[in-house]
Amino acid sequence: MLTMTGISKTYQSGATALRNIDIHIKPGEFVFVVGPSGAGKSTFIKLLFREIEPTTGKIFVDGVDVMSLKPNEIPYLRRQLGIIFQDYRLLNDRTVYENVAFAMEVIEAPMEKIKKRVPEVLELVGLRSRADNYPGELSGGEQQRVAIARAIVNDPLLVIADEPTGNLDPETSMEIMKIFSHINDNGTTIIMATHDKTMVDFMQKRVIAIEDGYIVRDDLKGVYGYEPEH
Image (cartoon, rainbow, N blue to C red):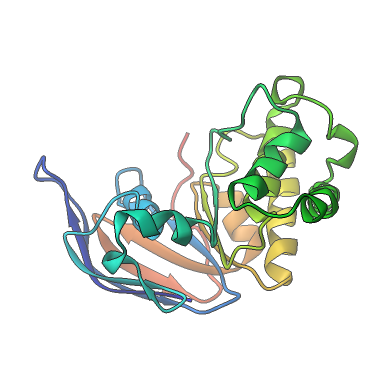
């Protein structure tokens, strides 16, 4: 599913975010990426969908050499990925249904398929009754559910989540994590960068810890291993 070999990233400022990273993630795995602020987690996540490029090394997603893609090919890579951010990034002038449907419209899915698939995904995240509401009418947890629905509506090979529970209370975070667990149980690979110690310790999934740009820990059933950050 995902292979990174010899990945390093040094920014123009001279700061090195990742140092000689080697990772292999198999299809269907659920992986938490943890570490202190500034450790290199966000750089790691951005490399996966080629928002940035490494200074050295190779990245393969489902056998595709990400670094060899031409600029006009990158959107096709991203269509195979479900990307979820901490700040939701919803379209405020569109309803819940329209936000999720938009992800299918972008890939020119047939209208019949959109009308069938969107309600299914909203049901999965517990928002079918909110389909006609706008983001501004939703709680933070509900907005994050919309973001998850939008990310998975096209059945991505890989879901990448960057601090998806960072703005949520513990109870809502648990509900969101159960949705991710269900998605993973259906076979979708999930990579999640997080500071959420409670969720990581509860889930007992694979944990990759990054410190000062290095992988310092890779545990099959790991724990967060740090004091929670606020």
